[in-house]
Amino acid sequence: MQKGKFITFEGIDGAGKTTQIDALEFWLRERGLEVVRTREPGGTPLGEKIRAMLLADDMCVAAETLLFFASRAEHIERVIVPALERGAWVLSDRFTDATYAYQVGGKNFDPAKVEMLETLVQGALQPFKTVLFDISPEIAAQRLARARAADRFEAESREFFRRVREAYLDRAQRSAERFFIVDASREPHSITEALLTEAQSWI
Image (cartoon, rainbow, N blue to C red; front, top):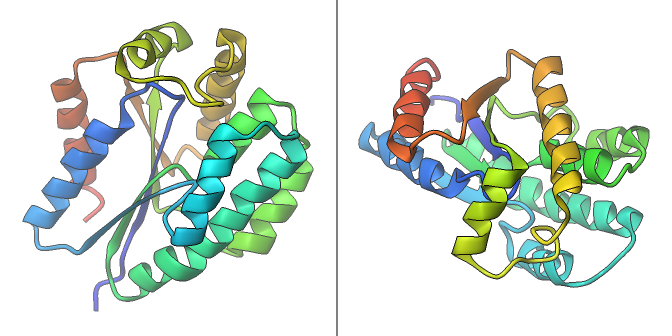
């Protein structure tokens, strides 16, 4: 059986991930591959309950981080690992890089504590590839304003998202072999073309 691959998608809110995940999912299914589409926080019934709390309820950054990893533990156990073991491709809208970007970069949470939780919850599990949609906070904010009412994270300041973006780029530099960085300010069709060209090397 062909081994499945775990692909994650990251970027600040408003980067336009959803459209491109749609395109990659369709492209993979056209090639006869099983695709499991999921997201964090969420992906399981328990994870979706945690997601609702995280997006709506004010809480300290330690509680926030612990809830993200609680959702992630359930997600890995119930969805990600079983899918990979049967040879499926898992496409996840966010994973642990988001915790480093938002909680460590954006909110100055202790990275050593996140590393400890990452080891505890994930073990050796890491994405095969991570697509980072890089965009300025200014452009992202304009897109969000046209799209929907902001949740608790989307309502953060431009300075917060500047720190998140810098943390993402730092993660990408540290794990260059895993990350594929996309200029998310480009037209969607151009981004799709670049993504699918890159995806040819993953199969």
